[in-house]
Length: 210
Picture 1 (cartoon, rainbow, N blue to C red):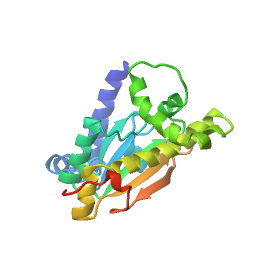
Picture 2: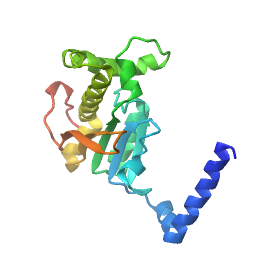
Picture 3: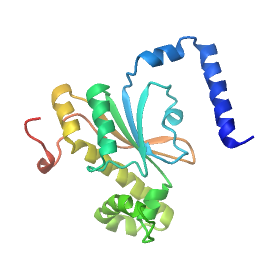
Picture 4: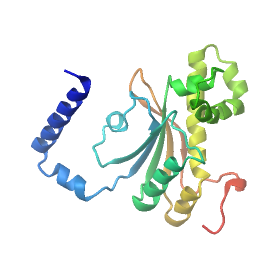
């Protein structure tokens, strides 16, 4: 059986199982989307947000890109963020990286990878800011995993620099922002960095009259 056909069959089996467990499952989802969480994760196929958090459809709003980046010129990310914060009124945002991330590892090297070079440049900037700490580590795996952690922290701070988050912090005292790293080898989520609403940031990034 072709893999794409298998996916369609698995979908039908999943739908049937859900209805057997809860006859109103899909009718409830159809009428309402009210998640408490926005997940900003890596596109890596081994880190599916709902599965690693054991959450159901409807509980988590999800955005994924290579290396879980929050880039201030990324209109896709910013549109998701604004919708999640202002319309869905999420209470928590999770930036989740993962150990062994290929995008982070590539940013540590100098190989030209085409269009992705422009995206990896954002991770290289994080590497540049922490180069002394990373370069003393023993091997590439250790360097990659430490940069994964530092990158997650940087992306959490990038969220706090947006007017979207600052406005929500001022008006509603939400959301909390969490930086986690997922372990591919054990399936465990490791908290790395956290920002409560109204956490002070460098004044040069603050916006007036929000």
